Length: 155
Image 1: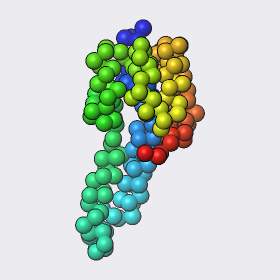
Image 2 (image 1 turned 60 degrees about the vertical axis):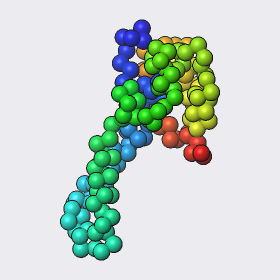
Image 3 (image 1 turned 90 degrees about the vertical axis):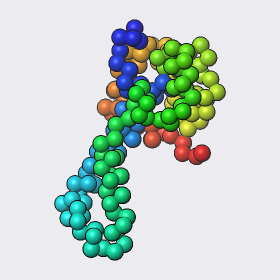
Image 4 (image 1 turned 30 degrees about the horizontal axis):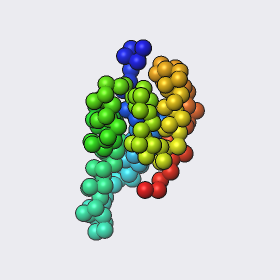
């Protein structure tokens, strides 16, 4: 069953990409800020403001990159390149950590300290299957839920 569903929005650790503000909200907001700055003439106005002459071009490039940012841990363009959960899941041949016999392992538990819904959601994924779990995550996203709303930021 898991092989038949599109996994591009499922991280190996068991998060859903469309519930991440980095993918869903930040590009939109960065695009809006680009448009506002453009409408206000900042495409070249910054050159006449000494404090912005050197700092605005890298900021502008950063905003443009953020506005077009689309990541996925499935293709290696999201999360740390050396993510131990991705490496382990690929090595073990599981589509997501919740389907591993060692779930939740120490790596998942560590991430779960910052994402308190990670392990309960993973257990739910295992219980109801990937297809139903994906539908539930889409419904959450449609209601505006984002992991940042419940994420702990201490490191």
